[in-house]
Image (cartoon, rainbow, N blue to C red; front, side, top):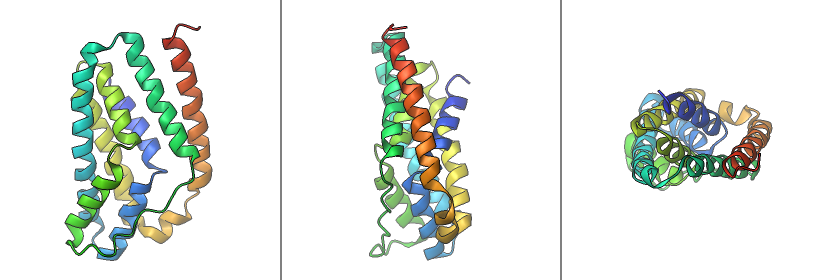
Length: 188
C-alpha cells in the first residue's frame, strides 16, 4: 500500500486540471458514448502507467533513498511547472475517423505520453517494493477524473474553475518539491 494511495492522490489532483479529461469530455460529446470514451481513456493511461511503473522498477535498485526522494521532488516540480503554465486546448481530433473507442484510446495515449501522471507513477514506483501499486493507484485516479469528465461533457467541464485550481495546485506542488528536495540534499 506504500505507493497506492500517494499515487492515487497525486494523479487525482494532477488530472483534475489536465488536458486529457478535457479531451475525454469533448470526445464523449462527439461520440455520445461517455462510458466507452472514458474506458478507452483509462486503458490509454493504464498502458502509459505500466511503462512508467516498469521504469520505476528498473531504476529503483540504482537509487539511494535520498535519490528516490529527489526523484519525487522533481516529479512535483514538473507538476508545478505544468500547472502554472497556460493550459492549451487539446486537439479536437476532428479528422480522426477511428470510432468511439480507438479515437480516444490513441488520442489520449498520444496526449498523455510522458506527462505528469506518468512521472508521478515512475517516482512512486521507484519508492517501494511494489511498483504495480503505483500504476494501480494512478490508473484508478485517472478512472475517476476521466469518467467524471466524460459524463459532464465539454461545456460543463469548461465551466469548472480550472485556472484557479491549477494555480493553487502548482503552488502546493512547488512548495512540496522544495521541501522534499532540501531534505533529500540534507540541507535541513
